Structures are given as structure tokens and as C-alpha cells.
Amino acid sequence: MNLNQLKLFYLSIKRQSLSDAAAELNITQPAVTKGIKRLQEYYEVRFVERVGKKLVLTRAGQALYDIADNIFTMEKVAEDRIRSFQIEQGQQIRIHTSESFGAYYLPTIIHQFKTANPDISVKVDILPTEKVVETTIALQSDIGFISYPVQHNRLILQEVLEEKLVMIVAPGHRLAAKTTLAPRDLEGEAMIMHEHGSVLQRAIDAFTGAKDVRVSKHLEFSNNEAIKRAVAEGDGIALISEKVAGEEIQTGKLTAVPLAGPPVTRTFYMIQRKDKFVSSSLAGLVEVILA
Image 1: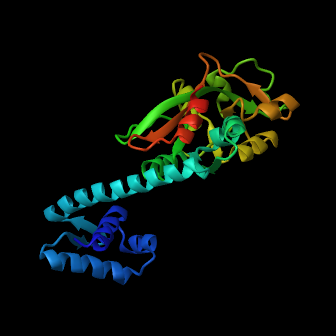
Image 2 (image 1 turned 90 degrees about the vertical axis):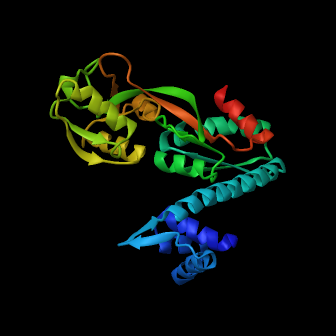
Image 3 (image 1 turned 180 degrees about the vertical axis):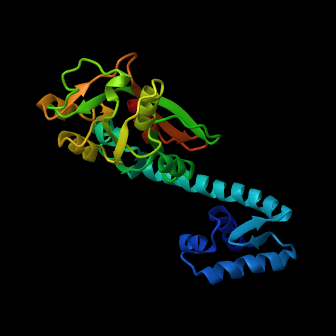
């Protein structure tokens, strides 16, 4: 079997796009089309049909795709194992992380690890949680950190830490003098939100939704610094990590007010692919993280 042609077929189906497969392999789209055509001609079996813009597998195509998925997954595993030996020779550990953990917790962890392992390079990329999960499954990162639990048969999920969430308001805001906030206190308030679907947005929805309280979600940011600045300038209030806003709270630029009831928290998780080879260097970093 021609593995190059098989990869053209596999990536086209996986991406549901001939052009995306071509871009990933740095070839032209006609070359992808020709490769799939030759694969089908060689075996005299049709593996894929085009229905509108969608690529649809035949029964034979589904069987071949499942086999190809195993083949190219093992290719990734092989590359990962080899890279682990490179890490042992003083190269690089790759970490993909969500913003809050990457900006406010990870630097301390890496400093502790680097103090004991000065020859190991660590590369950190801050990404949306969904992307962290995707790249960890694809072995594009050695470990990932996310802000809510995910279930996937190729991942190991471990709790790392829990942090307290507080409502931040400008010092002159009407809510700044309160010791705690009940859901009704938020009625009509302009809420500055994290991106749709975030843990913080779900926490606010749960807190206010139980009492049928309406808030105005007129601003949405994916960046903590932008949220803090908008609150400080009086554009609204926001639920945020107490640690993330710690400096501004201490200096008086922002006022933190806890929500009434049980503490509102967020848990961070570490994810690793189950079949990933764990070098001694990576094991050392994980030990620091979980200590």
C-alpha cells in the first residue's frame, strides 16, 4: 500500500476538506485529488463519495479510514517516543495551557522545575481549552492544563488545584460596600463576561439563574487583563479568579466581593495522552505539578 496516498485519503476525510489536507501536507489540492483517485484505481474500490461539499465514506472507505487512523496515530506515538529521547538530551518539554493557569500558576511551577533541571527547555503556549485538549490528543503537547473536566478515551485527567472566584467591582460601585452578594444584588447589572461557554460564565448563569435574575451581558472578553481594566473603568462587574485580580485588589484599583452561599470555585486539570511515553524529565515536571 502507498502510505502517501493513504495519508491523502485519511487527512481529507479527517479535515472534511481537500484544501485543508493539501495545506497540511504542503501540496496542491489537485495533487490530493489525484492521490485519492489513484488509491481507488489501484484497489478498484471506491472509498469516498462527494455529496455536495461533504466527503462521505463508503463501507470500504470507513474500514480503510479506521485502519489509517490506527496507522497514523502510531506514527505520532513513534515521533513522540523519539522526541522524548531528545528531551533527555536537554531539549524541550511542550506545555499547552488555558490562560489563567498559564499566566498565574504555571510560571511558579516552571521556576521550581528549572531550578532543579536547568538544561531542560520548557515551551508554553496559551490556548483556548478546546484547543489544549485537541493538541494534547494529537501529541502536539506533552501535557496540557484546562479549566474544566473533559472525558476522552485517549486522555488521563488529574486535578491540579482549586481556586476561589470573586466578583470584582470598581471601588466606587454601589456593590463595593457589601460583604457578600446575593443573586438579587446583581439584578440589572452590566456583567463583563468571559467568552461564551467558559467556566466563569457558567458559574454566573448558575448563580443568577436559580433566582431568575437578569443581568446585562453587554461586554465579552477572552482576556483577563481586558476584563479587569473594563471593570476598573466602570464598564461593569465581573466574576474572576481571586488570584488573577489579586494585585489590583491589594492596591485598591478593584474591590472583591464574595458571592453569598458556598464558595464559588474553579478547578484546573492536567491532561496527558494515555499512551504517551513519559521521559524522566517529564515525570519530574509532573511530580512538581502534583506535589
